[in-house]
Length: 379
Image (cartoon, rainbow, N blue to C red; front, side, top):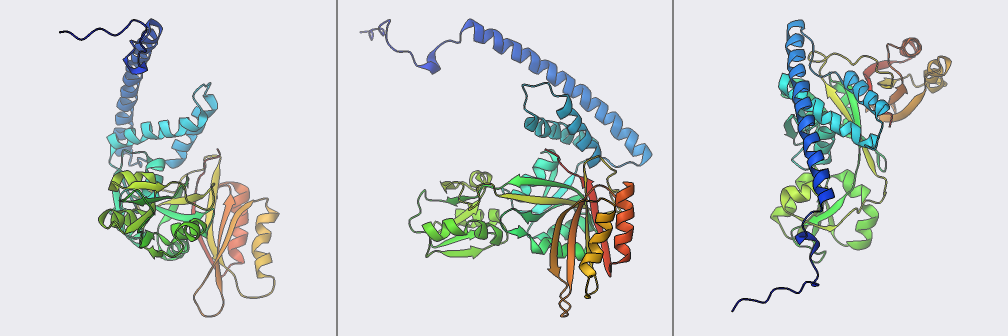
C-alpha cells in the first residue's frame, strides 16, 4: 500500500522549499554579472601578459609593491559601496597575484610548514598565486632568499604583546637583504589536539612567542603541563597530529591542515594580538620601491657610548620634521655594553626632508644601515 501523502498544512523544511520567483530573478542577475566579471578579468589578464612581455624587453621587474599599494589605495578611494573598503585590498591582491603569475612565478620563503601565521602573512601580501617555499627557521628564510631559492622572504619582526622578534632583528645586521614591504596579521591562537578534550595533555608544543602570548591561559587551564618550544606553531600542530598526548597552539588553518580539533579557540592573552611581518628581497634581483605617498623607512644604527649620544642621534629627525614611529635596541654582543638601535621613520629617502635628516643622522652614527623604504597600509 502506498504511504499516505503529507497533510497540506505540514511544516516544510526551509531547505526543501522551492526558491521564490524574486530569488530566482536575483540569482539570474548575479550569474549574469559573474559572467561579465569573468570576461573583464580575462581582459585584464591579457593586458597583464602584454605588460609582462614589455617588461621583459625593457628589463623591468614584475613586482612593484609601491605600484600595487597605489592601485589598492586608488580603488579604496573610488569605492562607492556597499563593498567594504577592508574587502577591496584582499580582492585586488588576488587579482594582481594572478596577473603576476602569468608573467613569471613568484617564489616566496616563509617560516613553515603549511599552516603557519608566516604562510598566512605571505598569502595576504602576495596573494595565493605564488610558489610557496616553506623553511624550517628564520635563518633558513634569509638563506633561501639570499641564495636565490626564493625571490622574497617573509619575516616576523614584531608582536603587539611580546614586542620584537629578536632573531629577526639580529639577522638584519648580517644579511644583504632589504625590506620592500610589510604586512600585519591579527593572531588568534587556538589549542589544537587529536582528541577534543583537555584531559591527558602531557605537553603543549608551539613557537616560543606563541607560548608567551598564551601564558595566562596555559597557567590557568593547564598549569602542570610542559610547554615545549618548537620551530613553528605549524610544526607543533604536526607533532600533535602524530601523538595524542600532545597539544599545539596554532591557527585554525593548521587545524584543518593536520586534521586536529580546535579544543579551545582564541586562547591568546591579548584579544587584539597582532604580528607585523617584513617582506625582504635581494638588491641584485629587485630594486628598492619608489615613494608611494605612504611610506616607512627602516634603519639600524649605533652611536658611541658617550654622554649625549642618544640626543645627538634624534636631533636630525626633529630638526627636519621626520616622525619616528619605532625605536628598539639590541645588544651589539661586543662585551662593551654597546647597542644597535632599530628605527622606523615616516616617509621615504627620496623625500627631501627625509633625505636631509638621514644624511645628518649618518654623520653622528658609528654604524648606519638602511634596511629599506617601503609602502605601508594606511587603513
